[in-house]
Length: 389
Image 1 (cartoon, rainbow, N blue to C red):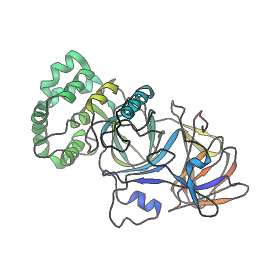
Image 2 (cartoon, rainbow, N blue to C red):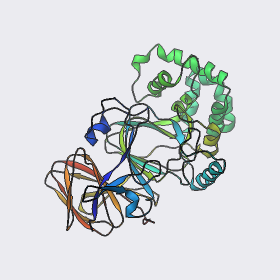
Image 3 (cartoon, rainbow, N blue to C red):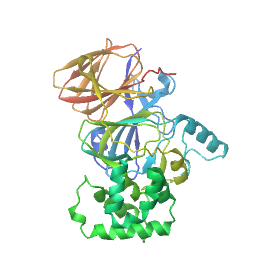
Image 4 (cartoon, helix red, strand yellow):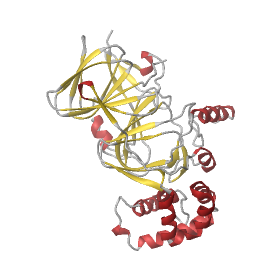
């Protein structure tokens, strides 16, 4: 029996996606200029991958076993994603069962809990990447409230109750008050719109307003752009989002791995379903200083991204043309090529990963060799301390 199978993922055409990056890697034409936002590799029910058999037939990924505990993706973020958090396992289980009992279809636009699982996630930048992550230090928020005239009315709320009280106040504020505050702020920013850079919150506020605010109605998600940390990653750098960590992706391309879940609680800056009350029940309002994910260099040039979760393990090989790597798969493993050209071989078969053929899955306990036919970057995704059920 073959131990290596070409893996065919699923494209998600969300409206925030770019038009060229993912189609180019997949070797397909995007003649209709659809947004190619995400490319899923895994067994999630909302986007299960398939494997290609030696005779050319295809089968569900799950034919190799049951569901994986992780989901691997590529993202192309052209327009910013929603203000969001992911629930804990306990909350996800209860929320999923509640919505099942209420008869809300999994594909319904107002469905919040798509499965029973939490969704810790790790992202590795494939380009310059900007995101929001966690609340800024309290001193920075205090200074911001004092510096921005339109926000000075919020100072008493912050002084009395801190970050959590401030955020709840603006997220539950009557829409009329939201419009009054943010319209004045935007009028001020538009006078000097060309002067802002991507490393300033005001740049993203203007971009969000152009997309999500119309006819005088302001999106309260804009407050989050000011109150969350603005993070700029260089290509190859990574960050981790744990349960209840507020965040939003703003721009760039990445590889992302997460627990096998699609549970997202949204609070604004999106055309998808927003549930502010559910977000506020599950958000961590502790101020943080964002940290880039540490990398351990393991044997044979394998760079492992260190995370505190068991569901997944992501590593990366950066290879020069002619270099070879030998390894043994401890569990079912997905390899995803993002640059260059490589060959993956075992005792009985070999597969070329290149444009149009980006990924394979390898069964556990197999000795394989990776050979770089060109300078290449390939990611290896597998279970953490889990085994496939």
